[in-house]
Length: 314
Ligand SMILES: [Zn+2]
Image (spheres, rainbow, N blue to C red):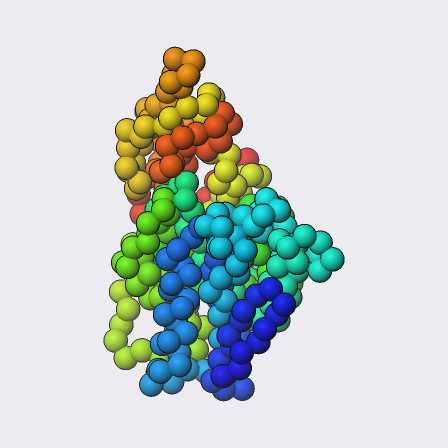
């Protein structure tokens, strides 16, 4: 085992054999996403004590954005979103430096998993996502990795979004997925367990680890959304006023187009407004922290309402 110390990021690398790929797994790109951080901590223990035959190399970063974690916030003191700042700049602010370092680690890997939650403000229904890469080999690996992570939703989105860890992987032709599960302040053991199982599912797909028992592939809602801004979570069902959001629905509910998802009430002005579903589909993102500013997201609907594969175009 080797402990690599980038200047601002702690990475642990485990070399099991010269054959096999190098898989990078990161958590804590945002400083308020708890379960992925704990899942990577547990993965370290598992890999240090495993009797499993593992091939290749695995690098783990449990807290990519330590200054943000220390604040318990999405971003560090400079207010820059690490997932919009890649590939970063070593001479820049703290987030720009971390972006440069994590980008360097991604560029050295063969495959990449980046795990997230909805942070302090949102809850997200479990999903594994990827960019609709122009290289068919990269895209097919990403599809398989996302499915192997075994979350109920698999989501391919626009490759045109920049600044993310996945954009760095895209530009380097490294197959990469991200995951989203949970959020809203608490940390749930069942989420940690399923993230670990998901990582092992991907390792199994990559033939880095073998299992005797058959792993049950879950029925999945699988959407490939080729529309331009697909995958940008912060713009979904924005509130038209400042106020307090009360949800009428639960995460994972199927909502109809035009159905009321919730209400925003402004106790200062007395104004109120309804949040209406813009499409029919699965409510996969829901605001948990109720106080909302005008223009910020309250809810996200993925336009799929049953298992199977769907593709959407402009
Ligand atoms: Zn995140």
